Amino acid sequence: MRIRIADDVQKSAVWRIHRARHGWIGDWNKDTKCWISSKNNQIVATLREQTYLIGDFEKNETWLFNLWVRKSFRGQKLGQKLIATYLQKQNPSRVFIDCKRSLRKYYEELGFCDEIKLTEKQRKQIGIHDEPNQIVLMREI
Image (cartoon, rainbow, N blue to C red; front, side, top):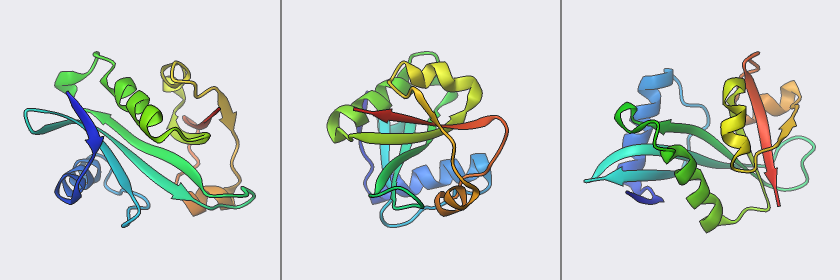
């Protein structure tokens, strides 16, 4: 497996994957970085990185979205490897992830231990929905 930042062609493929899954993709612009894991030139896992200056936060904050692993590669902890590689290479002092409540333990294994409550205004700025099964977790060094 090879993990890296996607080039423009790969980024476009990632956009299509997530668009097909969700019907919408949220804030996707030139500043969006996509991290991918590939095997034999096929994208098998993706992670989207976005930076925001929102609400009461004092500086730009890094957010991770859209972790996806191809079904035939699930169960191999590939998503965790992708996030761990991202954290090792980027070394952010603080990073947030929007995820399903049922996946909390999965992300806690990577150090995302603090649940954050966002205001409605902050959620709108980031483009995430306030859904009962969704939570925001923070990892801080």
